[in-house]
Image 1 (cartoon, rainbow, N blue to C red):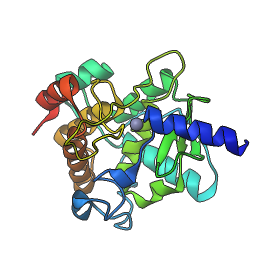
Image 2 (tube, protein in one colour):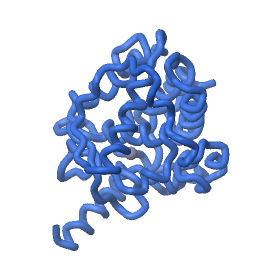
Image 3 (cartoon, rainbow, N blue to C red):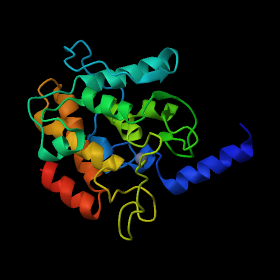
Image 4 (cartoon, rainbow, N blue to C red):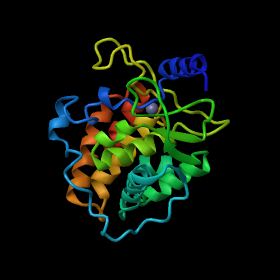
Amino acid sequence: MGAIITTAIFVFLAAGGCGFAAGEDPVGAAGAGQDASNTTPPDAGEPSLSQKESGEKIDIKISATGEDEKMIRDALDLLKQMNGEHATNGYDEKWRDTKLNVSKVMNKLHEQGCDEIGMDQCGPGETACVNPQNPSKVRITPEVRKLPPTMRSMVMGHECNHTGKGRPNYMHAMCPEGHEYAGKPACDTDAHGSYASMTTTFGNVAKFCTTCTGLVTGDARKIRDSQMKRLLGEAKEKVSSDVGQ
Ligand SMILES: [Zn+2]
């Protein structure tokens, strides 16, 4: 790929705002924000992968090798372990499921066009992204390694929500003046946007997961609280009344 084309794509991504930049996210890379100090560090140990997996198989193709493949697989495996007997009305409305089952969420996103997750390039500062030239692939960068396991899993869901041909890809809205991320495309006004969708999903994990470790439930709560701040207008009203504390 030529440098000019690459630059053009990155500019588009930055303008479109579908990339996930952990550096700008309080739940992102450790030390990046005030919430990060309360978040489980990346080297705190893998979540219990020996835990019984009660979710269904996630069919999304992984295009990576070695340690990268393992990292992505572990992130998807962790999503499979997020299950419970209940879910909020907003979760049911979004994912058509009355029980928490995050592997079903991922398979629904797969049906909508999230065909592949692999290592690839993104724009400057972005941890992961979807390139409009290939909207069925989630691109993960090595920056994802800096995130704690639950956050890595959330990034997979966030980016998958941006994938798919011939459907809305939920580009983010510009955050308003006075907002922590003012002037950056790091907010959602649509309740189906990636921040809104993951706030709904991880809010339900925090409330209802019966198969999660305490570590995962705690990180899910931090994801809900931090990403709720990125929701505006209708998205905020809807998601906050559904999974707010
Ligand atoms: Zn995004």
